[in-house]
Length: 298
Image 1 (cartoon, rainbow, N blue to C red):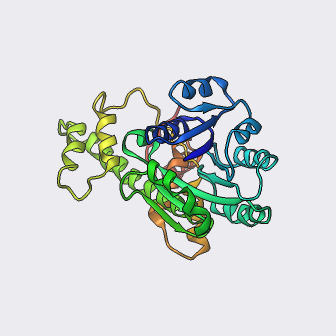
Image 2 (cartoon, helix red, strand yellow):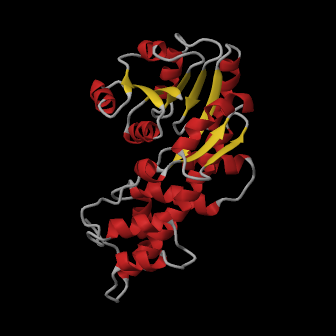
Image 3 (tube, rainbow, N blue to C red):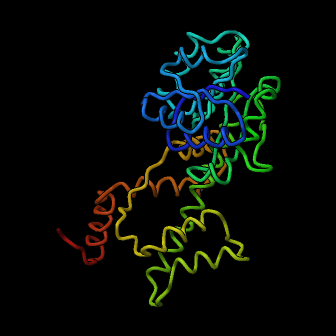
């Protein structure tokens, strides 16, 4: 198939590479010309503007947007609409909020433009092992694009999850679960690290991936991260969140679904960004006030 691809970041460029390996034709555009030149050198066709990208695609056109969620995505859609025509399709592959998909779909449909939301998991490893594809959209819009989804995904790694927004909704919950899993591993390995035993944490992570009920790809990544230095001395314990965890917690509240693990995992990420928590200082002060417990001063 022939497809336009906007966004050549860490995931986007590797997705283009995977499509090229499966003999798709890709017209690629990125704000940074260097990234376009790099991917052209690997077999893609380059474009210097959105207008040129659209011009190089045969009708009906398929254009994949792979840029950060939020205003960057909105801007790309707005610019695309200056050039697309009825019958064309936009695939939005960023980590957008499903509410945005539900808003965009009817607006684009009114103009005759198909809209597909694609939740993508696989990170920087997707080129090698494939990307888990969670797709939302109307069936007649999704079906023509399925060869692209199946090329990007490993065997059994693609699902048309449902109506517009369903792809990003499933990806949102996927990432919320990921928060909880990562937090459990982090806490368990912190206890191991603090023990009196001389433990090889990378060996333990690797061991648990052989027959253990807690085996997972995340545990494989933990083993890889721990091998160079299990003290992780070069890292700062500052953990970002990209939004999906917050949205998962909000959806749980909206649906009256208890989700304490995911919620606490999200809150722990917030705590990681405080060098010295005021709340912790107040806890120490209160313990000193009522019980005369020792405090540390700066």
